[in-house]
Image (cartoon, rainbow, N blue to C red; front, side, top):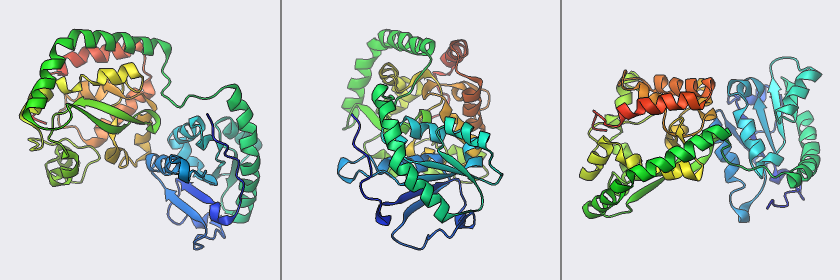
Length: 371
């Protein structure tokens, strides 16, 4: 059920604005923006995941619910991430009502604006542009965009979930069901072993970022002591990706000889048994058997390169191109891993390609590294 989101008060105090894809000196392109006026609530984000989370936080709590007044994006930035950010906003049941304006360094033509509107961008202006002009447009869009969309949504409510091709979804349901049946004999012994060794839940649930920045409840058999996440900073210097990324703190984390792992955890990780509960994620529809690995929130926030954003165009998966490729190159860098995810996203996720990756995955079940 959709909330009544028609703004009843257009005072300056209610105008929360998000600027996406700009540098910190965005006011050079938006002339006379009153950025020093504390009455304007605004944020500048170049990271698509952080930008989407900033928007979601404003509509997640019913008692504090308030739609942002507008989103202003750099057109070149949107093109780089294939308009994924815009598509996610359009698919959200609340954020779809927020006006979106793009700014570009090039001249805008009428046919370009028409194309952008088909991509759910409400308007486009050439830089530099006066803030008064943008504000007048936002005022208009805030009054009329919700009224236009509400009728459409009542006719066909858009489901804010991962939408897979039918043949891939059938492949996932059949494969996950078969996997649960064939592995059912090992579930109970693993659960008992985890319960006997250390206190805490047998199945570990964490927030992960999957397709289109959707945050899912990711399931695994618990292989670490309780509250291990809070001690990650103590072992980050052991991250294997740091060495392959010239000693810099890497986006991805893979700890060798991690002291947070239990004895049972080492065993189930070695044989990939800790991944079995993700078959439930697949049946639930928030993951696929084959795709790009869903990332912890702290990793997704660090994926700031435009070239990496396309990895979120593919569904989250238990296995994928990166997992089967690391056998040939176990010390690959974070950039190499991200580009493999991008490659899978751009080549399309056909059932034939997924079958090939799934077959190669059987040779990767037993891990040679203690991570």
